[in-house]
Length: 219
Image 1 (cartoon, rainbow, N blue to C red):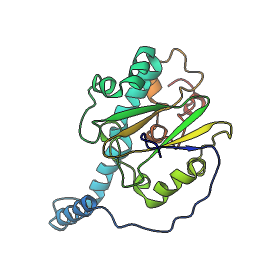
Image 2: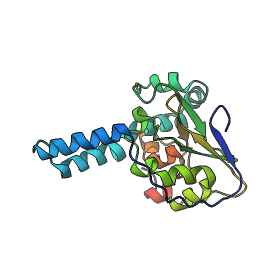
Image 3: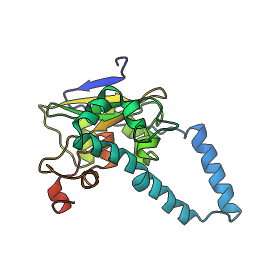
């Protein structure tokens, strides 16, 4: 692993990990607080699940989608995002805890990037919201390092063998955002239209951005 916590994988490997780890202390505290609130009748567990889903899958990733769409539509912003991501992201108002030090890695015709946190679940909350459960799981954290192509296949994405796959290990000091490739056939699209093609998983790197055809044409 380099100073950038970058794993370079050009070949597939297979890894089975059946080891489960206890949840981190903060997760135990959250679960205890949730149980207490439910027990006292202050929180409806079903409503809480809906709220978590809303922030984890919908509201949270919207910030990252706007950043990606801006980079696709504005070449000057794309260069700034890659050269000085913290300033570029802050210029859009997306700052906060868990996102103080960001690095943006760009997918190209030759390289595909994937993000993992091998130690826990470091994640850019201001851009992507709450981390999904699978991102925090031990199997993902282990397999992403040794078999990233296999991980992507599980999400329905196939990366050409000729393309280099780079795995980036997030830490408490540096969080990563993948800048997906802009889908073909989107010339002239507005930023709000481009946003519809960006997914949270594409910004983690386990998927590609949506293709316009999959969205029924222009958004």
